[in-house]
Length: 248
Figure 1 (cartoon, rainbow, N blue to C red):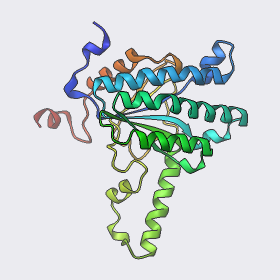
Figure 2 (cartoon, one colour):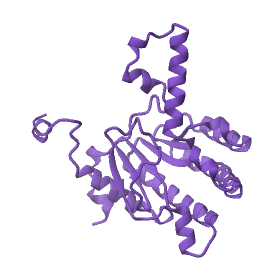
Figure 3 (tube, rainbow, N blue to C red):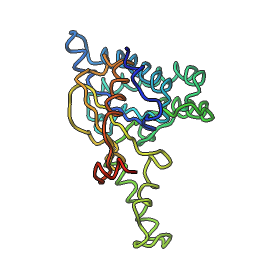
Figure 4 (cartoon, rainbow, N blue to C red):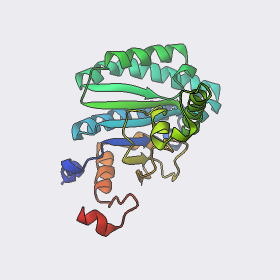
């Protein structure tokens, strides 16, 4: 029995996040430059998006480029941006054919103009699609997101549009980049690293974490299905005890 056949369709997570890690190490193992790994990682993205949509996942968020990634060598950053532009341009038609909506979170204005243009055009062209929402986290970090949210809330308080005592978890949630998107129920990280790397720190308070040794370019549909099966075999208690969950 293949992994997909073991998945319970009535217990799917609505939102899955993925930290796509290991492109550089994968390329190094093969005696290639890092960009070879990034280009090969696009195949893993395609397979994962296809399987997520096929299973019925409603939201898939991919950590594509962090604010910290700007510290990498300029030649790698430029190549990554070019890869991003070309991939979005090539895949927009496929997204529409599969009824997948594209969205993005992060400091989008910090991206090169060509990237912003392709991204905004793809988002506009796919905005009416309903099967699944694919969210790209670009120039994103959770600390940047939270800082920006606090600044916006503080400005509203200073203009007396909001009272400090009225600030709630919901207020903060509504000022995050992910406002309107449900918190991820499952977060996958490839490459064997066991850390969150500044990704969706507020949103993953009760998210199930799944770590795999697979480097991102080797990640395939079967691997995604294995992560979903692992998720479905866990008991999610949200601070309660097992007996409470079983009796509800």
